[in-house]
Length: 290
Image (cartoon, rainbow, N blue to C red; front, side, top):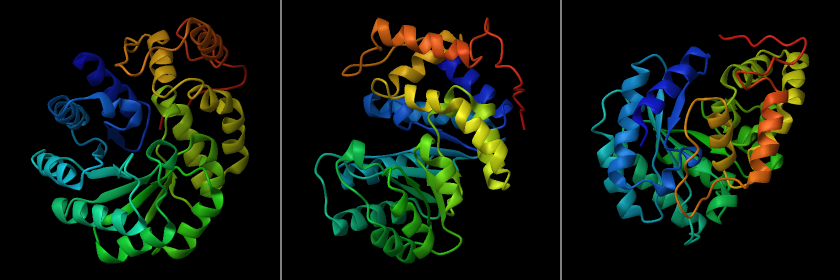
């Protein structure tokens, strides 16, 4: 792990105005970290943040027993704010299986808050809104969901059926404004790794009902939201951050770096958006750091 780069990324994100950090999520290549590296990465992010913003730790496994063991390790990290855990992958559990899995996690880390993460495109199974409602009732420390099904009707059902204090975060950059428009509370973002001030500005504008500004920013960065999935995430993100001078673009097998053609497209787009140090910002736009 490139620890100095990780420290620098944390500082840059916080200085750019983000509201909280998620360590070891999908974009953080959590799936290819061994357990010691994963725990060390979470520790670094918590230490680097130094209480300036909350830090959530990604903690996902398709074995509930293994998940609970890892959750026990997270409890040893002072200053950690919450745990984010995705559906068990590959084995495609039923709704009851997912309920029991997340309930066991919540009990294992109590009173640490838990955010469940519904990402059927990566895990092969959907977490139905009815199951989320059951979880919210059964475990008071299950307080949020990252919803990345890509289905606005599902977001709406969560908004309409969950307790008012339960937080709903879009897991899709391109659906963030639409999700907030029907009642979601924010975004856990991919593109904010590359453009933290701009994405923060977009989300805060929407949450403050400044929809003209929010839509203008979404229109400007929609191509980046799409580009981050031209090849498997986090390959494109790490490439753009490399082009920006923040990190190297190494990924671990089975991931490979984006093809030369994709890299060239990413460099052209990043330049057009003003993300590269040698490129001017788009005319008429001033990034604001909150």
